[in-house]
Image (tube, rainbow, N blue to C red; front, top):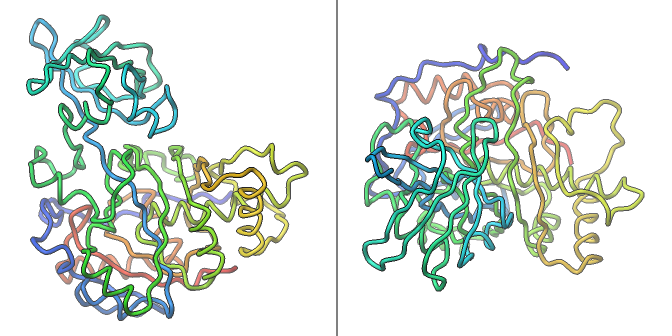
Amino acid sequence: MSPILIDEYDYPLTDDRIAKYPLSQRDHSKLLIYKDRQIAEDHFYNIGKYLLPQPLLVYNNTRVIQARMVFHKPSGARIEIFCLEPVEPRDYQLALGSTDSCTWKCMIGNRKKWKEGLLSIQDPSGGNIVNAELLEEKGNTYLVRFSWSQADTSFAEILDALGELPIPPYLNRPTEESDKTTYQTVYSRIKGSVAAPTAGLHFTTPLLQSLKENGTNIAEVTLHVGAGTFQPVKTADANLHKMHTEIIAVPLTSIYSIRNNIGHIVAVGTTSMRTLESLYWLGRKLLLSANPQKEEMNVEQFEPYAEQQTYVSTRDALNALIDYLQLTHQDTLHAQTQIMIRPGYTFRVIKQLITNFHQPRSTLLLLVSAFVSGNWKQIYDYALSHQFRFLSYGDSSVLTTNNYHD
């Protein structure tokens, strides 16, 4: 596997170019349009002009949870616990719906001050006492078991009452009350993310309605965004970077829509892209398996780059997923993906991507480079020189690829 030098995916991003707050009107952000190596600009509310003919817009309906809780030891030491993903129960909805206890993989701030014992915090509004117990270390994360005194309260309600919305660290400011609204997409509904799928922050309900009225179809997927999305590539060769595993859920109805609209798929954001491209590799695995019902539903990091692969069309791969779900009497595909989309990847599902501007030296920038056949510098140089705002609360782009084969 040829090395991918991360030094070649760097650019000067100064603090003043990072949008610390969103615009007052979501859809008034600037929009960069890239197609056939040509760049133009407009405003996001005009995005319908630049979408593929008869587009199927696929967005991630995940909702950010208030995943950061602050506890204090009797000594007064502040311990910050950041819930990353559930461990017991493993399913997000079951964990968030738990009414007695649950265990999460967490990051812990000021860990050196918390070596053992229970930490407790009380909800001032309802009197519920919440306990945190440190179980074990998992690399740079920890397993923490939460329990609480009122059995009629779910963990989701506890987070809503006591948690804090974890806005990105590069904003360099505390979470404000307004972030509870502005750091959620208008279509978010499935709780589980610790970071927003920010490409969707530009959509408003009237804009989505207008797109529908003008012939845009819409499908939903779910990928709960983890803290790994902020991890920079620290290895000189990006191939040595370990991708974090993400859990995806795609309704059978959405898979039908994607299968019926091959060649017209527009992904809203990199999370939707990773989900959709993973569908191809999952379906391909089923199609080539001697026993599909026993296949593990996961995509490994470098699975798309194996040599001498048997050709499978996108339509056949999606049909294999549909057959699998029907055979197993499931209405939603649940799977895990560790897919790394980087230069050398050929897109099998997505022809157009709506996305913000990403951090230097990041896996997301590698993904964009793959999508625009290595021409990311032209796009980012234009954005920098034309006063585009960067990162989560920044401006948007709509990119059309020629690196596509179905």
